Amino acid sequence: MKTTAAFFMFIGMITFFAGCGSSQQVSGNKDAAERIMGLWEVKAIHNSDEVGYKVIPSGMFKMIFQDGKFMNFMSTEKGAIISVDGTYRLEGDLYTEEIVNSFNKSQEGKDNPLNIKMTHKSFMYLRWFQPVDEFGVTQNRWVEEIWQRVGLEDLEVSNVDLRQELRELLNNEELIKEVIK
Image 1: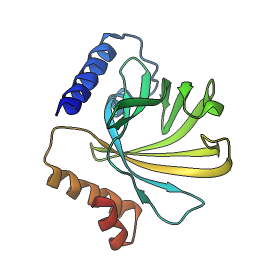
Image 2: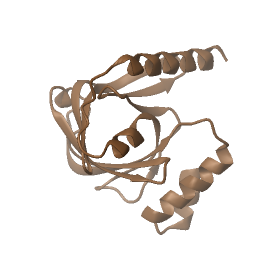
Image 3: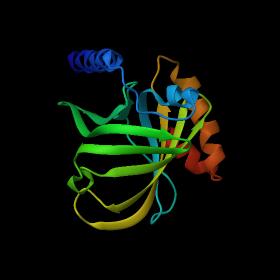
């Protein structure tokens, strides 16, 4: 309980400080820019050199701030760990992260262009190329991620929305059931 309270306090502080920024590095459609802002949790990932989407355990998040900054972090038993942060640009269907700090040191100081697709109001699909992983191993593969907006909502309703989203991307009903478990 103490860890949960500390986690939500951390999220609240991040949200507060994000609202204090004023310069937004987003060009193009303002509605699209506003739709990506907020807290997202990754639900499934597909690597092009593997078969199908993998279910991602709860606890991996992306926070996109109004001032043009972003942060990915993980929630663990010992607390939250920031895995990557920096600034972003949104130009049409291209969301580019300018990496400042990362677990994957080969990303630092570089731009990470991601294809973005927003579906419904609660889902974001990101696709990006991974030349090298965080261990320095050459991958040269595409990574596809399905993110769901974090909100105060009923879990059953959320799973229905996720099922509908996955049906747009997947044909295998058994895999959809596995992702939603």
